[in-house]
Length: 542
Image (cartoon, rainbow, N blue to C red; front, side, top):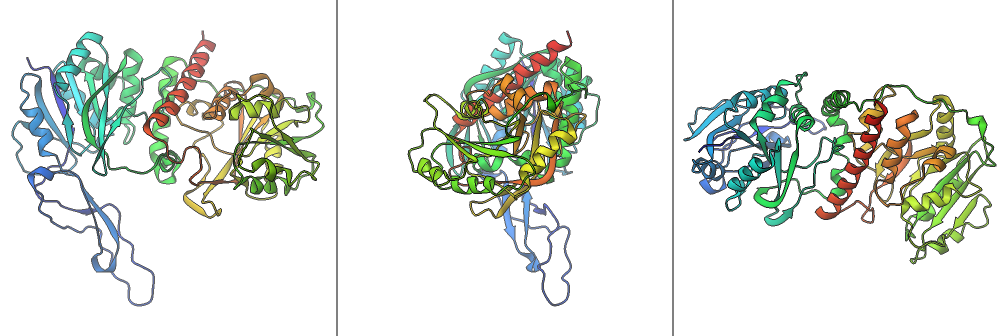
């Protein structure tokens, strides 16, 4: 019996028609202007076996541009078309018109796969018990009896949507790509489901019918949130298919995609969809915050810069110098928690021992992560009223950083302040994506949007009495994000949109190049943090 419809993102052509992704720009220089073409077409023969995505770089008329075209994969279509016992219909979702007939397939014109209009069109077409959406344009190879397995598990679990572990072909090498379980707080829009989404058609239709906004980018995200409200998103921890992955960047390059200015329009829509979801499940917080009386506590120092460090002999001197160079109208100090370094870091710190503002701590405990080191610094009797972050491989951008941060506490009456930073290489030269200002944060909705994004920015600073009461999770990843969520539940988080921090990216960054297992562990931890926080916020309304 035919049980599901298969919907595939596709553009069907026999030859490749390459259209510029962006208008090429002429090189500056003397001489007459060269007209800039807005569309250029090239043809290339493609064999039946390699009819997949294609990418080429051309130089027409001395103008450089990248040209990209997506082509359907014949094998994928033939593979599912032959499984008549399970596949009711195959719909090829195309963004351009064409006249080629594909046996066993129906072509559906869409604006984009991510739009609300496309989601509603898919729901309209879903007349079988299940609908499988393949979200990539590249080759999909199903595992042995994979479709049967997914259908059986869908029937057994009664899940609203299922997704699975899989393999990826990256630079010609087959690699395992496990995914993680979906949680109540898995609200980030970049949650990795893989490219195969298997929906219970009734759940899909119900979710689509409750979509209120017409999104250009957030349609599939909105659908997922709506479906998750009513049913389970089930992770099948079995390797059921193989896909081609063209994004071979290291993890450290990918983590900043969501703050890249070019993605601002996407982020606005994602925030809108997430905010609507939070309101529907009772997790939305109105912009009402507890007032702080900063005069209630007496501190010897107005501010303390906290630097946890382990084996950073290459960079720790620069970090220390940037702190000691601060110019302020208040008394401050620097607390370094040296977590038993073995590479000369301890000796490098001692070079600054003559400066009475520096407090060098070597904890007795041997079980401290970054968060535990923070707790040691914050609970030190010499810690100031405000505890200000600096990572051991970063530097403050100028001598006024600390003054700006402290001023922000008083001006915005906040318990936490987050600044703006510039991405740099080891030599502190700006690199892409440049300045990270996290302007997605707003006083009205920042605390809600914080549940969707993966970070809040840097540097971070805290009102010490509140931080001492909350405590920092003793981890070496996500501890700052956990604090941001906890602080924002009650208190305003202040923002500084001037660049006050240089964030160095180099090979020894903790997130520079993580394998899939470590990435999954990090993402799972943050999803749990979100879940705990979301549960607490929902409980506030009961």
